[in-house]
Amino acid sequence: MSKKNLEALPFSLEMEEISINGYERVLRVEEKRVNLSAIISLHNLTLGPALGGIRIQPYKSFEAALEDALRLSQGMTYKSSVAGVGFGGGKSVIIADPKTQKTPELLLAFGTAVHALEGAYICAEDVGCSMADVDIIRRATPYVVGLSHERASGNPSPFTAWGVFRGIQSVAFKLFGSESLTGKTIAIQGLGSVGSCLADLLFWTGANLIIADVDREKTDLLAQRYGAKSVGADQIIQEKCDIFAPCALGGILNEQTIPTLRCQGIAGAANNQLLQETDGDTLAKKKILYAPDFVINAGGLLNVSAELEEGGYHPENPRKKTHQIYDTLLEIYAIAEKNRTSTQSAALELATHRLEHGIGKRIFSPTFHNAITD
Ligand code: NAD
Image 1 (cartoon, helix red, strand yellow):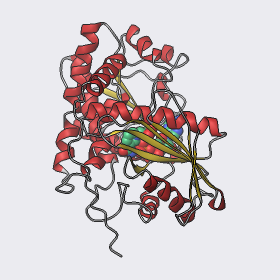
Image 2 (cartoon, protein in one colour; image 1 turned 90 degrees about the horizontal axis):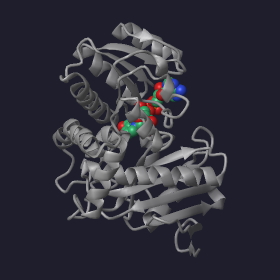
Image 3 (cartoon, helix red, strand yellow; image 1 turned 180 degrees about the vertical axis):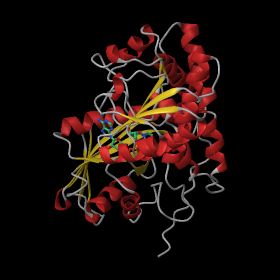
Image 4 (cartoon, protein in one colour; image 1 turned 30 degrees about the vertical axis):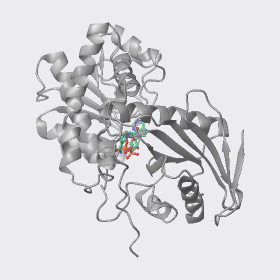
């Protein structure tokens, strides 16, 4: 491990390299005066600089934070590879309670660390990190997307929701021979930015909804708006439905929950839905069609990465690509069928094939249209 002290910067940052097999660069970042303790994980830079969010959470330990950063950055590599955005996989985590410990100084110090990587990592908002936070980080580095300026891509959630909607249509097509969702029952777990937008899209296309969120008030409100059946947050996974759409937590498809499923397909926004890769095989054995999360939920990534196009952000471009998530998923179902593997394995195979052959590799450097004007 080598230690580099960035004395020249206004912050006294300690950036310590952690050597992890299979990872391009993993850094432990500390700035004691502002209580910054963070990890930046760059998993793979084959196709372009690593693009990935900043997760701010009060992790129980450094090891737990590291595990999350490694898992999430690897997921970003696969997501970017299949989405063809010309970016690699990265993610950062800041060990702090976003409600009480997130200060402008901490965010600025973190931005300084991102800047020290000279564009190898481009950060964005994620759980616990808001648009206002990335605006602060922008003061320390231009290597950030999802800001509030007028040339930015804005809220990624409607794009993610549209990609999930198209993914649900692909599951319906594969299972029932038609992409129509009229009269189909879809159960949505989590009614946040993506889940609530998805509920709206599904309502207008004629689907019947079952919904749940830990926030009962929100669930009741949307149940009334969409004539949906409202159930408890711990109950929705066992509801009989055509397609289950997990839009809340990771790891919800596991040894305990899979035997209780009463759906024919799974297609939702949540990251890392499978607790383990083998859970994808269990789903395949149960003949439940699973739309791999890192493929179906790429709409937000497609949108935010469009902000870095040379000609500036035009929503029509990511809209077109998000629409095509349907076709990518049909391709993955076909690979799975041909190779007699799970759809998860097929999606990973597609992602690694693209990485190995440099398919979708970035030719031009990303353009940052985010100059500070005030
Ligand atoms: P969000 O925080 O806005 O919403 C999550 C919702 O899930 C909240 O309403 C919360 O109350 C609810 N929830 C939490 N625990 C629950 C439980 N046990 N049962 C039921 N509901 C529960 O998040 P979001 O932006 O809507 O994202 C949803 C998921 O999709 C997350 O896993 C996120 O990582 C993933 N994702 C989001 C985007 C995006 O563009 N926002 C892109 C890719 C992936």
